[in-house]
Image (cartoon, rainbow, N blue to C red; front, side):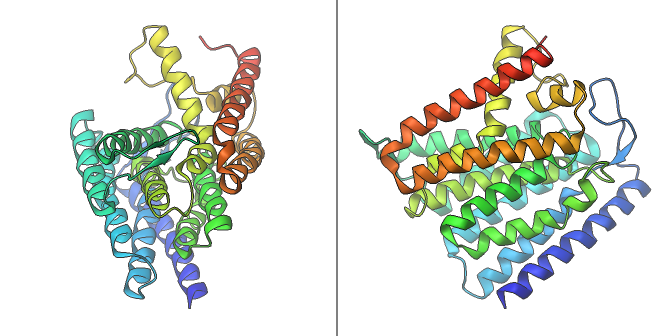
Length: 327
């Protein structure tokens, strides 16, 4: 029965992406390339709606079959708010305030259903103040929603990362929910692989960021996987995003202004294809999974693995800087 659900979710996502492409072209929901784009031809956007519909369908079936806890189901369902405001953003290009307001409501409700973030174990001591931790979790959720949006800039990149993260977690947790996410994205990626026939758009990237953050909180609360596991396996994205933001602040740039300064974008500018860049990112992720696995099996090495993680990614950034300096 579970296999049938995965197949349905995959084909639902695949077919809906095709329909989204058709509708986006008809309604002129098109991403027009400019000097700050990583693509060269006008391309439909908003294909992430297929991921969203397939994902919510899949988890609803699991909930009906009593294969997903009620608190987690309702927390993940809050992603509907994120998806709705994001599809409007894809169509009408909304200002930041309404997007952040709706994301904040979704994050608050999700944390309410999960009972907040209950503890973080830092080896030498534990943080158990649920109010402090929940505020921290709220900030991280909002941050991850938008960081995931920042890194959705080349063909297949954000989708590949979501597949990697969900599969990496499934290997350890063996939770059907994670495969639902995998197959929802797998149905989309053939249409998004270089050269992309449709872009994910905010509706897909923000939902994926939200979903991964909520899963991290839930599995930490249930003691199935330490939250640092999620921090490490998603670090290729958040590290690039944070370093780029800090560098732009140092240069006194307006953060809301579009740019092509993320490490993965500079690799493409330097001459790498989108496909080659994504493949290299998956190789890097393989090493990150080893670190995350060590954290899972030996929590006492959390701080050491985080340190290695940051040093490793910093070395990669420095290597990219030599190929194409950050300006």
